[in-house]
Amino acid sequence: MIAMPSRRLFFALICLACLGLLGFGLYLEHVKGVEPCPLCVFQRIAFIAIALIAFAAAVHGPGRLWGRIYNGLIIVAAAAGAGIAGRQVWLQHLPPERVPDCGPGLDYLIETLPLGEALKMILTGSGECAEVKWRFLGLSIPEWSLAWFLLLILLCLTWIFIEKKAGPDTAGQTYADTP
Image (tube, rainbow, N blue to C red; front, side):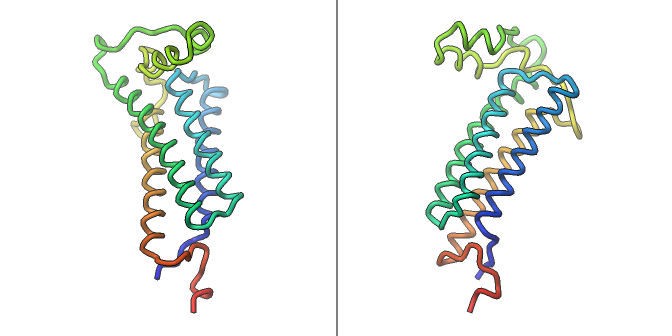
C-alpha cells in the first residue's frame, strides 16, 4: 500500500505554485517593465483558475470522488493554458516573415468587438505575441508557462493514478495510521 500525503496539502501546494508564478509575472510586468501580450494575459487567467480550484480543494479537504473532480478541473484549466502557451510558443518560433502583424490592444478588442470575435482574434495571436521579451535558462515566458501547465497536468494525472492503485480511500494516512 502506498502512503499518500493529504489531499489538502497536494492542492495547497498547487495553489501556492500558481500564486508564485502569478507573482513572478507581476514582478516582470511592474518591476522589469515586461508588458504581457494578449496571449500572456490568457495564460495568467488559466493560472488564476488553477489557483482558485486548488484553493477551493485545499479548503474543502475532499474525499476521493471530489479529489478526482478537482484534479479533473485543474487538468482542464491547465490544458487550456497549455494550448494558449503552445500557440504563443509556435508564434515565437515562426520565421520573421511569417509572423502576423501586430493587432489592436486587448482593451480595444474587448470594448469594440463582440466577445466571441474578440476572443477569436486574441487567441489567434499577433506579432506582439511572437516577440520574446524575457528568457531564463534559454526559455521564453510562454515556454516556461507551457512547461508548468504540462507539469500540473502530469501531477494531477499521477495523483489520480496512484490513488486508484492504492485501493480504498487512503489519502492522508501515514504508516502509523495503517493497521
